[in-house]
Length: 609
Image (cartoon, rainbow, N blue to C red; front, top):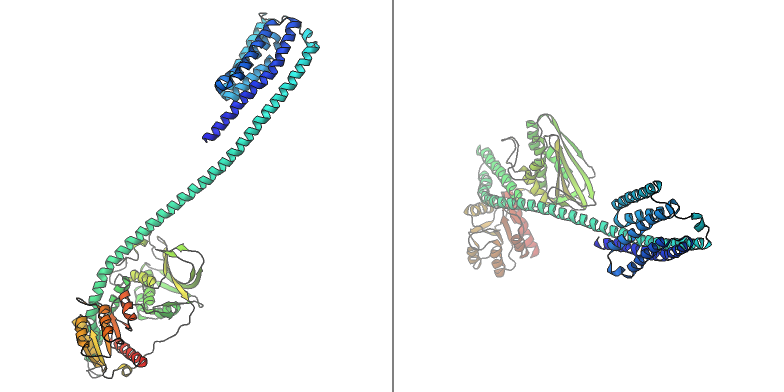
């Protein structure tokens, strides 16, 4: 901008220089005319004035590098004004006085702006008026006959030459100035384009900074949520571990006692109730582990439509409807729905909790809609807490006509024990957290749309798979997973777990021995060999499951083991399996699960040998 102002000033300075040079040429011929007039009609005073003004013009040109623009402009304007006034006094309205005064106004406007032009116009009008009044009152009068001069051939010749030269100089000067102004305008347009481009870049940078700021806030929110979940994970994980150890006896001792009772014993019903109570408690523990994403996930190809249909025909759904008979449940299930790779148990729990949460949100009459569809996402967009990337997805959408949730409530909806449901009718308060954990365990995404007072829609995006469903669950009779006296070593730091495992294995026909830690196990194995090891992963104090198995395979490189844990398949579990350990058995295990797992692993050992 500063450069442009300097260039404009340079153009104005150039105008003044050209003006003085034009005056020098025109003035030369005007001086000849004055000499002619002086000889013809005796105008020595006009000739003296013209000579004086011409000398001023020449001196200004010579000294222009030492004179500022302001001084030279004032000199040029003063010459125009003096010439105009002198012309009116000498020639009246027949001379060039009016033209000179008009030029005076034009120069003032060009050099100093509109205000200066207005002032110069006022001065010109006043000057002409005063001179005219002086002529009218006979204070001034023409001292010659104008026709004598106007009929002079030399005067006309000199005048024509002056006009031609003046017109030429003015055209050249104005043309040059016009070209300079056009070049300046072009440069200004170019500069304006650069400024617009810079402004656009600044706007993009501002938008990028705003986007980064939003992402930073989202990351901070996600970090806080993750930290909160981590704290809960530490507490819930410890509680779940201890409960699993206790529940092992509650679930399995009824089976052991029933094996010793007659079929018509009245105690069987009581023992069955104890076992069911233990299984319900184990389900709550499973929810706790799902909450902190530490449960063991066994995935297979399945279809969400089948799981929805199974849930809608379950006793749990019938119980839910009995609490809310005024709520209508509708389904729109895509018959061409793609399959997914997931855990049917965990996805079923997610479906159950989504439906329960939606129904509970409806007060009085209302409708809950369950919809499934295939969705091919071409462009990423933000979900509830992460970015939903392009790909093929199976979408499960549950929509209710309930009270809706606010943005503040949406931030907390998946937090443990955050609930507005009716106490005593809505389970443990972990439902939506279980949904969140199940979705994340299946590499899925969540999207929430809600309007306060109108309802809520939750969409779950599961990555689609195109493999066919293969049903590999085969029910085996009890006799098929009984043992034949094979030796089993149980290594567990919890005495109740050791006792339960030994009792179950013994009832299945195996020879079982239990030891409390890895050190004791190594002492035993240095003197004895076993067919299979049932190994707990978390043991205190001393060696854990991985360290114990490392020592075992040093002594017996082909020794096989079953991992028993209540947590997820951590890196240490996977490392143990890389060393040769087999299936990971979830605590608390039942007689049937333990029997099938041991039988399967022993069968693999025989096949390998």
